[in-house]
Image: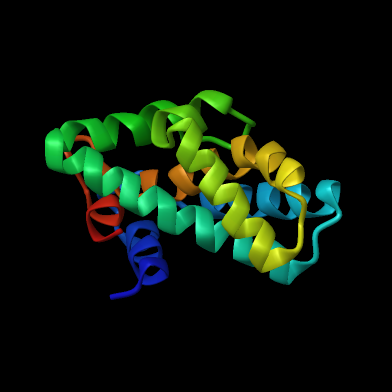
Length: 146
């Protein structure tokens, strides 16, 4: 099952707090980011895709050492507001540079601009992951499938 199908499944599951309003808020924030930064849709999609891949790897590493840590990062840093701490919780300074370089190479956006959008995009990605959280069962179907 794809990631997007997992998110839709979480929205449709009445035992989870996820809802379509959350998804709309995340998409609206992503669109605002794109408009504010003057990014075309393809560049915005590439940014989210690359950051999503690096987030997935970082959370998998966290999960190997402490399964509760990955969920704690999602809980603490998910949102729709810029958050530099979210970036720092997931990516070392060296990895932040690597992410910025990869995005810059694929989108032709300057590394400086990419560095400025990281604190905007990472909380949105984490917010998508939070949609599968079931606090009563201490389980997150979306995060687990990510």
